Length: 141
Image (tube, rainbow, N blue to C red; front, side, top):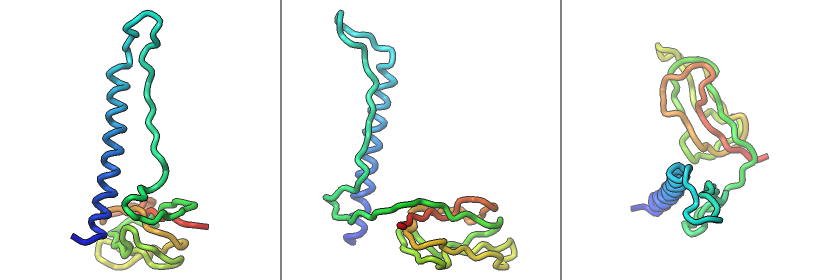
């Protein structure tokens, strides 16, 4: 397997472990919500709160990318979306990231990156309505 694929799998596994821990803590909170102390003078069960550090796991060797702002690029009209950007891609200000055409394939609108950034998310649906979130962009000032 390629090294990039292994890094992506390790990152995904770390995310799944974190979510599994979060679900376990929530389950414990629900199961013990009405629990009373077992001995006189003991405190009743207290709800647990889980928090995570806001950083990447350095052990997988991924560089940390600092971002200042997140924004969605939205569909300016309804139609068939054809994205030209992909997840993780760095885009420049004004770069074409996709087009929206009508049902007959006539190109109607070009979607451009409003500023330089990294693509964090995108829609998988080819049919979009005006105002739909199409591409999630992380930017630095």
